[in-house]
Every structure is written in structure tokens, then in C-alpha cells.
Image (cartoon, rainbow, N blue to C red; front, side, top):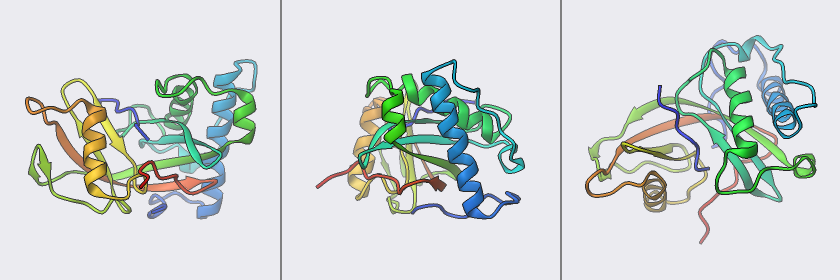
Length: 203
């Protein structure tokens, strides 16, 4: 499946069959992400391992690193590309350390001060309307992805305040044009975070 890098309300419903209270699932997911981030920064740190059944099911995930109330790094996929949620979290964390071209590599000193958010996308669906003018959605409840032939732009629920900004920003990040306006997808997320998701749109 196509990997979609995140160009970074709160949680919907804990995934069916998770088998853990929400607080315990949140702790397990963010702890795994934090250990994966530490190992990606310093390979001599212990390798991240999952011991929670709820994270063994397949599914996509995003990892967001929040520093001083703002997004410091964020990576993930909208479609599962590994056998388990745990693997998705570890892979997203590794990319967040060095794979976010908008930011320099994350340091251990920053990680020690940072907060971590794991977002689990679900209910991905095409948006109605024309390719260049999709139907509006509530950015507080839904995320938006624009997929073009060569790239994709994604905003998670809560990162935008208005649909107009959300659409313009995802189109910009996807490199959408009149010749290739891209395909618009809406989705929801379960957010397992140490802090709320920071907004990227500022007025």
C-alpha cells in the first residue's frame, strides 16, 4: 500500500477488541513510541519491544512529538504497511527522528522534554464533490488527506481550525495542481497522547 507521510477531537473510540482500558492503552502506545524514538536517536539504547496484545493487530499509526506546546516532528501512514500497530508505531517514530524534512533531527535532550502522541486512523473514506473542490468536513472531528500522483498531504483532526485552510494546506503539501488536483480522503483518529494535539493553523 501507498505510504503517506504526515504533514502534521481528541480520540474517538478505542479500537474494537483492544482489551485494555483507554488509559492503559494510551500508556502502552506512548511508552512504545517514546522507546522507539530514543532508540532511533541512539542505537545503543534498548530496542523497543511490544508486550501488549492490543498493539499486535494490524493498523496504521502516526507518532507526533510535541515540544513546548508545538509540533516538533510527526510521521506516520494512513494505511497499514506492517503486520501490527506496534510495528507501525516503531516505524513512524524512527522516521519522526530523522525523516521529517521540515525539521532538524530530534535530539535526546529534546526528547527528554517532549511529549508524545500516537494517533490511530480509521474510517478512511473518499470525499464527495469534485476532485478540486471536495465536500467540506469538520476539521475538529475529521482529518483530511490529498493524494496526488507523486505525493500526499495529510492533516489530522484538530490540526486545522477551518476547512478552507485545511484544504489549501493539504493541497499545497501534496503538490496538487489543476492538472492533478488529487484524491481527497476523510478519516477519523483515536488519539493516545500525553498531551492534546497542537493546532497548526493560527489566526
